[in-house]
Length: 190
Image 1 (cartoon, rainbow, N blue to C red):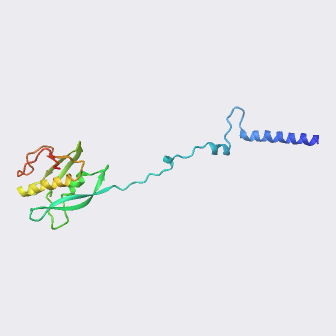
Image 2: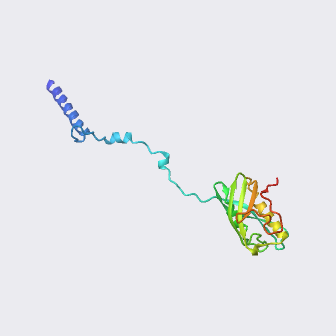
């Protein structure tokens, strides 16, 4: 029995030596042993949510806005609704203004035909609109009054717009077409 115990002890010692050699992967003395697969699997950090998440492009947001056109007799405004792209939780004011330039409805007249809206920037509640327009877009006094009312109705539907400052080619003018006063700025009437 003593021989069996010695044999078992030698066998156990040999197994420990062999398993120890396997741990350093045959590396020379002084080299760091490479981790065994079981150790590597337990020390690898789990992927974070940001590493796993995929970026999906989002479609631009849109909002329905009210636009105002004139009837064929230039006697009253007609309200219509269109969908306009959004920009950072607010409408793209240039696109809103450009939507006023044309209508597909034969019962409506665009008061902003031949207008070029160059800038529409909101700062501290004031929307500054820089525009120019051709001679074909000049209206009589009734038409100019409707145009200003259409502009106010369209832009003041957005609660963040408290006033509108209309410039022509970057300059303040007393009147757009010489028929109606143009205040600087036009204030929201509650």
